[in-house]
Each structure stands twice: as structure tokens, then as C-alpha cells.
Amino acid sequence: MLESLIFLIIWSLYWICKKRRCYLKKRFKGDIRNYLQNIAKNIAFMVKKSSKYRIEGEIKGLDNGAVLYSCHFGVWEKMPGILVQLGYKTGIIVNRYADYNRTIFARIGDHILYRMRGKDGVRVFYKNNVREIIEFIRNKGVFCALIDGDTLYAKYQKIEKLAKKSRVPLISFALSREDKTAVLRINCNLERIIAERPYDYWWFYKSRGKD
Image (cartoon, rainbow, N blue to C red; front, side):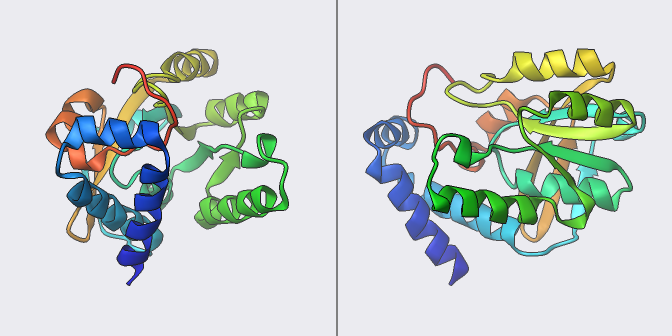
């Protein structure tokens, strides 16, 4: 039931916008429905509480603080909770939609998302909290951010600059769903993973340049 509801919502979000529709036609040709169904399953997985995960790659590099980056791939929203379970002080950066949309609905949405993403001890930051973010990272915090926008690496330079200012490593990650298990890949090649699992990369932007 949950997956069906999510599927209807994201179907509308993609097909209302002509640019999104053209992008999907070009990318998946006649297989758009299967792609959106997979995305609905991923969202449902992120919403449901689950503690099963598997790690691929060396995670000890996070022990003295790090900046982790990824894109809208797989089940990335599970990442902060996994890090908390592993004992890391974890922070994330999120958009504040009321900055662009002054309606009461945007403020309510921001509040709900803040509460959801800040559960289990995860620290939530906004983009104007730069000083607080740097202090958090320097105190052995692990900070997670998504870098894609109109291109896959649209925000990479900003995150790279943040890691340098915080004097910590900049490390890629990807989190995907395998049945009921979240598979976390540390220090991975995002482009290769997206090529291997194209149905797990999703995009809601109104325009798009090169991938």
C-alpha cells in the first residue's frame, strides 16, 4: 500500500514537468514505469525502520571526523542512522524550503523533515550554518552531504572546500537496497555505481545539463 501511494506521487512529480519527462524518456526509453516503481520501493525502505546493513570498504577513516558525499542514489537517507548505530557523531545538511517558498506549507514541511532527519541523535544543519558545521567536523563529527544538482557533481567543489577548511578527509559513499538490507559502500566510484545500478539514481530537478 505504501509503495503504491509513493509510486503515484513520484509519477506525478516526474510527469507534470516537461523537462523531467523528456529526461526520463531519453534515459530509460520505454522502461520508465519500472524505474519509478524501483524508486518507490527505495523510498518505502527509507521510511520504514530497519537496522539491517552491510558495509563494504574501510570505515575506520571516519574515526577522527570526515566529510562524506554522495548523490540522490539508492536509500541514502539511511546513512545517518547507520553511522549513529556504529557510534559516530553524525551530522547532515538539508534544504530549508521556506527560504524559497514563504507559504505556511513550506514551513510545516521543513519542521516535519527536520524532526524526521534529526531523530536518533543526528545533528541537522542548514547551508548558512557553515561555522557550526566546521566546528562539528573538527570535533570528530562525520558530516554527510549530497552533491548532485543539474549535474552529478554540481556541489562537489563546495563540499571539497568544506573538508579542506575542516582538515578532514573527503570520502564518497553510496547506499543501496538489497532485499531488506542496506549496503553501504565507502570510498566508492559514484559514476560507476550509477552505471551499474541506473534504476537506483533519481532526480527531481527542473533542468539538467550533462550527467
